[in-house]
Length: 379
Image (cartoon, rainbow, N blue to C red):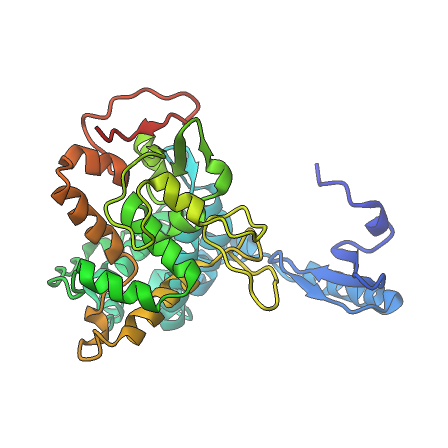
């Protein structure tokens, strides 16, 4: 059954909604068939009239599914990608888990590029050489292979829908990865970059270096994730792999190195407390607080702001002025440096694997409801 409309919307035409603005005025929005809401301003009578006209217009237009069923041989790649994004991706599961928001965003970005190149052509008429030629225009081997994988997934679904007879992208060979370009970061370089970074970026650097956690997990780390003497971290990138992604890191974990002169992970977490009311460890109070896409709190840093903040400090220190941009270390290199420092402390490979959340054949812990925790051993 359709969801019951709120009382203030019950006398409005289908797809027309209203909301109250802070100044008390009633604002109207119309929901189009693609699910997006379009502003209709404040005039109630005008909004109702326009909504009725739009309902009549859209009622005469065939839906995407109707167009695909009625003329399967003429469905363009752009039309099919739209259906794939709106219908197929939300239903996909990996070991029972829905696809992460980061994966969905990256997939949509890649598919937008593919659609721009070949979107006007019927998917049934696209040839392998056209797909190969488009992929050949991508410089990076890793990006080339990522685009190829998304194409394979699209064609696999299209085969299931009987729109294409074979998976052409699968017949295109992946590109061999080139030698690594980015340079490893040294501890001396870390110190210099740290001196140039603003406070929130410094804390993010210290946490990533010592906990070996990715940028995405550092930015989501909350103060209430600490309990019973452990920091509880659920890794977003590997959570589908089971218990290896559900970490309990001891708060008395000795640091590998700290420019803040903290001795334990718990000490680093305490350094994040600065009197600003925010549930996230990595935060800063902007001049004009406001919510943004991808942020759960106005003071939380985005992935981009962490990367850019590190890059700004790296470039400001002057150590890498003569180094080509692709070779300059990024925030992710902190993990490699932290692992190197742990190895020098005598950590075993298994200990490092556990802290990084990598899967291992030795991990046989059972877990209930998908929420078992892998405890990191420090002694």
